[in-house]
Image 1 (cartoon, rainbow, N blue to C red):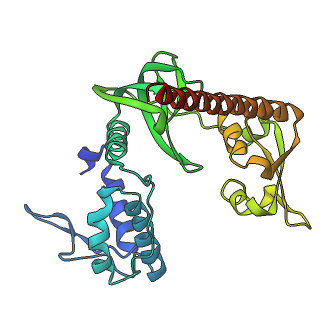
Image 2: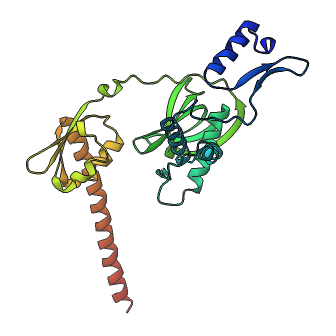
Image 3: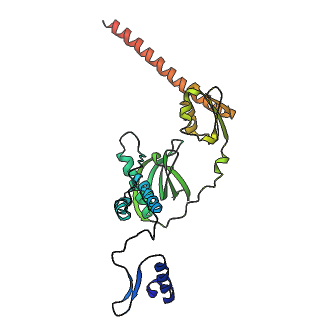
Length: 295
């Protein structure tokens, strides 16, 4: 054992003593067939894990299983019987959309496998500016944040780390080429402070929707029932679409340039609607007169 693990014999004996003192029934036998042995039929008991620790371990496995990670299902089946503990079926998580999700599930499984096995993939990706590009990437980590799945990866074209939104990955092709994973540079905790301060006033009629996107520290309740929200956020297409969905039930307090952006977008929507309604009226007029002319 000392040769196998490249340590001294003294280290092996010391480890055996540590295991014994921890309640693991290991012992040594001399002779030609001897060695270091574990007591037959030994299982984990109270000397290793307390009742609370067993429940916490089973709860953690249930959380993993609820995310559709199937590798933990066998352990979750065996451990309750082994521990003689039952915590019930207390958790259900469904990340899927309401519509048919067969393609999304297949895409997620392919990405999960590529991350775990460190295999490169080729994707067709469309960014927030509606620009499409073929990318060869090294997937490093799947991340779930603010109701959306993201893929953290190293992009071969850009020679830099990138985050890809799973919904924007239109096509996916596993390459089967293994790579040595690089640690993804995690963002600093104060990254959000780099975004501009957005202050919004929502009417009381739509206040219930505010709780889906903002936390308690960002919300200030007004006496008339309206809700004032202050948050550091990027001014992007998601924010514009989100604010437009409230119609006249939201007022932008600051910054002023956000008001202009929203007004321009609303004007474009109005023009499209007006043009379409005008076309429908003209089409109906010509169709009616055409029918009259031809009897």
